[in-house]
Length: 317
Image 1 (cartoon, rainbow, N blue to C red):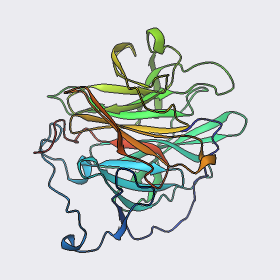
Image 2: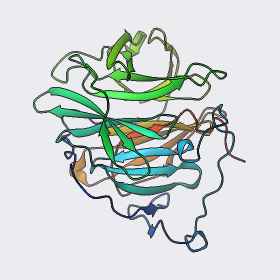
Image 3: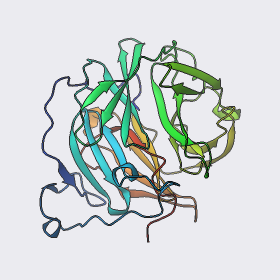
């Protein structure tokens, strides 16, 4: 997600997809190593390992178990958090001049990308479906997005640990010229409807959030408060179930959020004017640890992240 005033680069309609590259930045590297993703595994230095303990399904592909991120330059990457490895897939080819803002991934490894048209304020929003194999793009069924719901945080969540039917949840930013977020909603892609669920509760009322869901039916929001916080959301009402402050993480101008392997990953970057790129923070609820230097200054700015409910809910062995 981006702040409305950031003015991230517009989508590059019609761009050809370049050969994939693999980024394996060090913890403090702003110049990540780049190798051709077609290089034989024995020559890469980092060998991807099989992913186990996925979300509840016997039909999840390996591609559906990865994290995907979107840069402000409209490039799509896959991300293996346990290896600290980004692999560039290519430039999105969505037929729009709007700017990419947020992303969610469904259980078929299809990316749902929110684009926003903005000037002095957000004037329109749209959603496109992106193939995570080659970054090709098709318009989703038109969704009637009311005012205040153009710029979204997005994430899929299953019904429960035993029911893999999933819902695309969205969180609205609201009008950037005034007024807070109207809270949590959901989208019915087949009918093109956005259903308003309710406001976030307590101190989070009016705040905007990026979303990530899990394969056991949970939904979480990343709130760019001071300090930033991760909160579990009631999917039926939008109320906050519990929240955790994440000290040491900058209040960002570009940010994204994902769950993978029992951990949360926060992607944050300040204003683009200083040349700094995204930092990745890992929050591990199992022991309460927060690693703000998990990856730093990775070499590009992330504005969206998505992970399907097929992703592992426990750390890989």
